[in-house]
Amino acid sequence: MDQLALLFLLLLGALLSVPVGDRLRLPAPVLMTVLGIVLALLDFVPNVDIPPELILPALLPPLLYAAVRRTSWRQFAANKRPIFLLAVALVFVTMACVASVAHTIVPGLPLAAAFALGALVAPPDPVAATAVAGQLGLPRRLVSILEGEGLFNDVTAIVLYHVAIAAAVGGSFSPWRAGLDLVLSAVVAVAIGLALGWGSNKLMDVLDDPTLQIGLTLLVPFVSYVAADELHGSGVLAVLTTAMFLAEYASDADDVMTRLGGHTVWDVVDTLVTGVAFGLIGLELHNAVRTASGRWTELLGWSAAILAAVVLVRLLWLLPATWLTQRLHARRDQDEDIPTSWRETVVMWWAGMRGVASVALALAIPLHTDDGAPFPHREEIVFIAFGVIMGTLLLQGLTLPWLVGRLGVRADTEREQEFERDLALRAARAAKQRLKEIESVEELPEELSEQMLRRAFDIGVRISPDLGDEERREAHEQRARRIKRLRRIQGEMLSAARHEVLAARSEPGADPEIVDRVLRHLDVRSLR
Image 1 (cartoon, helix red, strand yellow):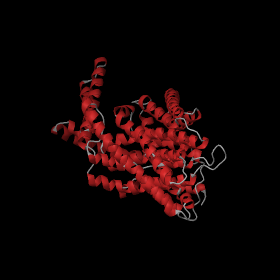
Image 2 (tube, one colour; image 1 turned 90 degrees about the vertical axis):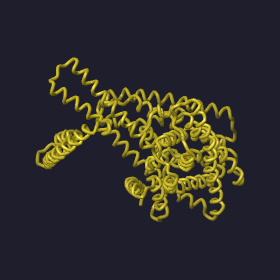
Image 3 (cartoon, one colour; image 1 turned 60 degrees about the vertical axis):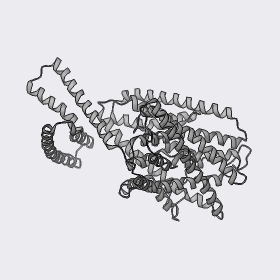
Image 4 (tube, one colour; image 1 turned 60 degrees about the horizontal axis):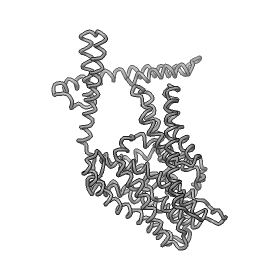
């Protein structure tokens, strides 16, 4: 088996892991990690040969962009305090604690290298957290915080990692220089993200075609990351800024085809890239086994100690941080998503799995320092990082569904249904208001006006049937059954038409391009 065959195998596994994970109630990323481990144990599977400097630019941009599409800037702004405590403060604390433990237990490990290890294992993975939270039906407030933490903690951790690596390679460290680098990195990233977001938004209007617009969104995350990285900014923060700008300002309510097509395309990209990323994590078992040859007890002991430090620090930080956030929330009466019980805090603690960013940063550790000497304890650092990642993914990822079930942490379905009813009512009112505006400038027949008024009401009832009274609901259900029957018959008619058009594609003298154009018209008609 060669590298290309292995890639296609991972892509196939990424697709199959979704239905298998749904059936087993296990996160698909965890299953892909297990698949990677199994493949790594097979003799005919080759070692993964990907330049470390390409892993972050190739995997992170699409994963981050896909995650941002599921949220909004206002949601982050509303939860800035808990996200800051997790995404920034907790990363600093975890890095310091891990560095202290590693420097103590690993003989001869320099403090700068220990801080590099702390930085690369500090950030929980946004993809794993989002996948697990979405599948388990957790409360929306917890999902919002986990998403915000996962997206922003990579920014902090990657900058701290580069500072620690520079100190280990160059042999010197300046806290003031590190702080200045952190600020400049953020400023450059935000500037590039906003500029690319604005430019992409303008270019969307110029392209004016769903296929080209969706293609542009596939390129934008990579351009944003690479541009920021070239100018010594944070590529992760640049991608987040660009994605949030486009989500806020590049959405046209009437651009239905681009929205539906983009949603499908990005779901596919998210599924495939996530599967490959976590499959690669499992495949790194090759290198871990080679490093641990003859030293299993020692290296596993170090890994277990660092894993315990990572897990315990998160718990010991979350308990007072959640209490403080609840106190501040009560005093200021702000609309902020926070854990409301110790059960939700425990779920947040156990959802802190490490993943793609940690693997990429571990593999990107330089081989040599500036003076030509080998990077101190590089193989040990990579092994420990791999042990922490696998420990959190398998231990926490496989047991989190059981923990959520035992604690009974579930989404507030009544609140969600109430919000859905409010949106349905607003949609129906907006439709009725627009009908009144049309009637003020156009003279509509009474029969047509009444029909349009019923359809305006149906807009809300179809979204939330509870809006109508019993009589109207019954009438709506009858109309819905009649419409369903009509659509079934129309669907069969359109199916016959599509089969006939497709059959014409193989006829002598048929122009495939014209056939595809006619078929596309029929497909669009089927969506109505």
